Length: 121
Image 1 (tube, helix red, strand yellow):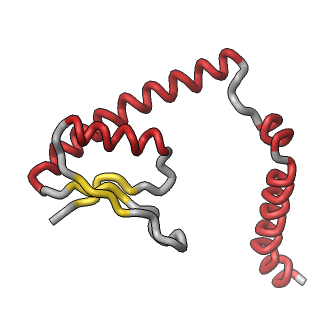
Image 2 (image 1 turned 45 degrees about the vertical axis):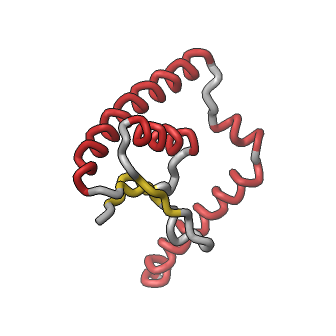
């Protein structure tokens, strides 16, 4: 019976490609399920043979450790160089998204506070 190795929700394309290449390079058979049409399932990468699962998990742990180290180093370099994205950059690039997020936060805080306000009065 096949086992899920990687849920593809919030996984970047380059990371999924790296995992596929890693599995191919180590001759581990896998298949992929596509995301659902309505976004309920994001799809996944499954290992076909249960005997390959421990090896695949070990390879995945090694890959994730290497990726974490590389991405953190890239982020720290971007911060040092001043090229890392800041709130000001996001505000300049997409002010409507920021305004809608702030509005949503205010509405949610109001809804959370509403019972206390109604009980008090």
